[in-house]
Amino acid sequence: MSNSLHLGRLFGIPFRLHYTWFIIFAIVTVSLSMYYFPNFYPLWSKSRYWIVGIVTSLFFFASVLAHELAHSLVCLRSGIPVKSITLFIFGGVAQITREAARPRTELVMAVAGPLSSLAIAGLFTVVWFLARGVSEPVAALAWWLATINTLLALFNMIPGFPLDGGRVLRSIIWAVTGDYRRSTRIASLTGQGIAYLLIFGGVLIMFRGYLVDGLWLAFIGWFLDNAAVQSYRQAVLRDSLQGFTAQDVMSVDYASLPGDLTIRELVEGHLLRTSRRYFLVTDDGRLSGIVTLHNIRAVPQQLWDTTSIRQAMTPTEKLKVAQPGEDAVSILEQMVEEDINQMPVVREGRVIGMIARDNLLHFIKMRSELRI
Ligand SMILES: [Zn+2]
Image (cartoon, rainbow, N blue to C red; front, top):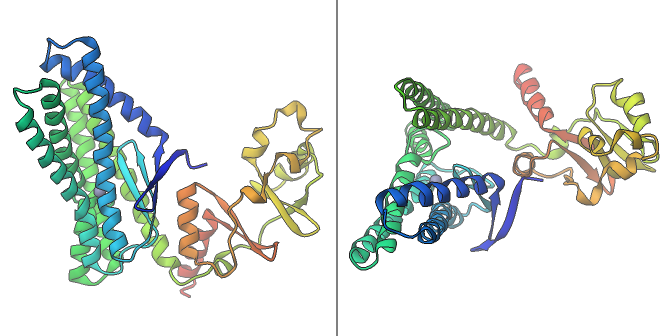
């Protein structure tokens, strides 16, 4: 569901690989084995380039994991549970369930990652120093990893939220002003400013003829801008939902249908005639599943007359369901983490409401417009 592969647990924290990681793994391995190593060490055999390339990539992977693990361990020590660590295209994300309650905690949490990257860089520098003249492949591997971990530390210290440096900036402003939301705003805006600079610089470099380098820089800028906007929104939403339960934020504006309806009947009788994108499937008032556009598209059109929505739906066992008293912030986090758009609120097997991500925004907007 969340496009990632569960790999195992470290210190009790589940860790996963997002599918984009495989892309970056391939890019790193290919560029090391086909360009970087052949360029600096022209005398190696072809198989050696590939073996050293793959081993170096695996160490790179371990370095990124160690960076995230450092954040996570500080979180755990400060009493903040860590749900999971996911590695994806630009590194990793440690999914923490709560934000730090104090600026000092956030500061320590944020610097732990870059510091561990620097420590790893130092370690590989020592390995490089010892391996020089003894084993060229080991020295080559160590040198590249020392460099990349230094870059990783530097990149993450860019002072734009949600990067580590942005979190450091936020914690400092937060400590000075005591205003959590404003400090998040400033740190995100700084992130966006830096992102635009990177995009601008990237385009400039492209015009100077360095197409690939410029494109990369612009791409990183674009990514950073997206991340800044999204995590700011997330932070505001999270902040505004503080103290509410599922029952408070759920919507009672949903529709349920009997499971023996055919898909054709659903599409022509309901889906095209309302603005709803999903329907609950119930039997005698008990929830048996949800049918969404996604489910319908999975069934070939010639089968729409003969397939019931019960056969096409996502059954309750596979759904995330909220309890009425559950904390709204943690529900939002589950939805984000697992990429779910709607979640039924269920009391003793019966649906009493729906939480949709858009609904949460509506809830916040209405409350702020009504000033309640
Ligand atoms: Zn980090």
